[in-house]
Amino acid sequence: MSKIHVLSSDISNKIAAGEVVENAASVVKELMENAVDAGASVITVEIKQGGVSYIRVTDNGSGMDSGDAVTAFLRHATSKIHAADDLEAISTLGFRGEALASIAAVSNISLLTKTADSEGVSVTLEGGEVKDVQAAGCPDGTTVVVRDLFFNTPARMKFLKSNKTETGYVTNIVERLVLCNPDVSVKYIADGRERLFFGGDGQLLSAVYSVYGRDYAKAALPIMREDGGVTVGGLIGRETLSRGNRIFQSFFLNGRYVKLRFYVSTL
Image (cartoon, rainbow, N blue to C red; front, side, top):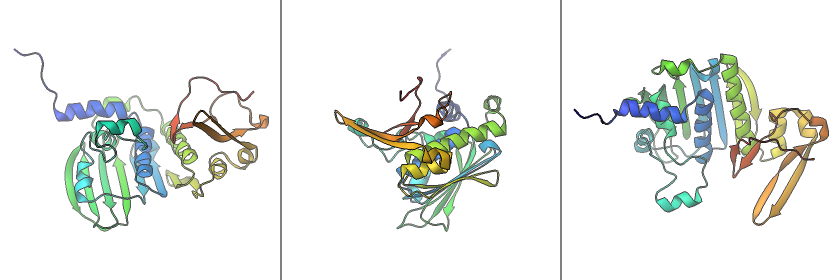
């Protein structure tokens, strides 16, 4: 009797989801990055109960037509690369085409989207299975609503923290996306309360003001250095902002937030 068999699409999709969807914060990150890649200048994020019960990300980006709206939920379906050579010059935040498929595999999700030259479409999925596709009236752009995260993978729920802690993780992601995209207006709502609003004026100092407040913005100093074709720029805080941890240090590489495992000092 054969010992090797091919996993069902249901199981393989859940395994793949585990590599992309760690918690609600990772869902928000993927959806916001998709919005930025779609050219959005305005993004609204709303969550409830730490994002486990409800996540909504709305943008005014390029949107999708009815065909792409369904195809987007297939694994490795992407508009960002077409050939292997494209991997050498990726300028988008995402490119693997796994985000929507992975999120859909472990939640109930609905997509409402419209391009400038097509009618709107609504797509609804439950646990990765398409349940409904129909025409819908909506503005240009995309809205993704994720409900009941990990409803079909209860073991994953055990690794989640309290709603307050999970909300904090989402807040951290939203703040980082604001800091690295100062030309995008972002509104963030958690449990019915507006937690952050940034107008997207293109100024990094304004983004710092919205995320960290007036005192931090007033004590920030601009820096810029170019050497060997590499440009490093941003803001550093005066000594009055010194902290004993790295919570207020944020580093971005080509528009993507990166985590450093070492402490960076300006001394």
